[in-house]
Image (cartoon, rainbow, N blue to C red; front, side, top):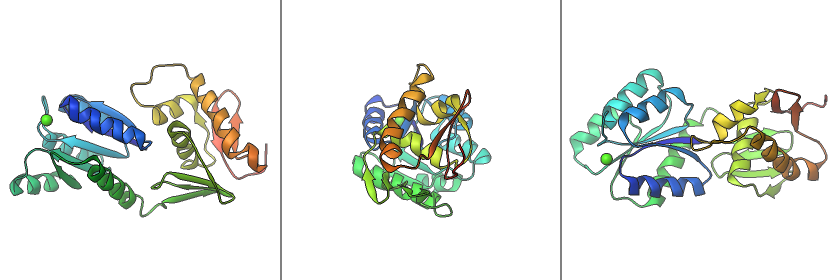
Length: 226
Ligand code: CA
């Protein structure tokens, strides 16, 4: 899952980024509202965390503009202000939840997970391909009921494959979705991670689910054909 954080206070931004990375989210950060808005309109985020008092474009304006294009992405507002009028204004412009600074990271995490869960009500929290099971809220992976430990990037890669079953995903698509903007490297990083993932979720279990599509990319599927 990929989250956009728009926050101009470096200390707060770092604290949130470090915490969410440890929880296996990919995080992009913007230091002002203008950059934040640009990123929010180009990239497929699963959730936005937006401070209200921002340089260039205010958080409220950013949310208003994002909502015109994307009615569904969950948005959490962060702010030092706790006046009721501000709260009302932000819910009206399209925020889903509201956190007043200072807050504990655990509180933010609870709200982020609750919004992601709500967003997935129509889809399922648990995705399945054959006997492989992925719980997208607990971030747990099981095959034949055996819990499999993955690193955060392995997990993100697997989740991306499993949410697009049978579809061939190119290395570039995988990098754009699984790695965040801080990533500047070679696309063969994808091959390295696919190899690690196969060693954990495929090789010990007999039937191979991840397939290589030569010179294109990868796909995951339950089908028998090679
Ligand atoms: Ca601020």
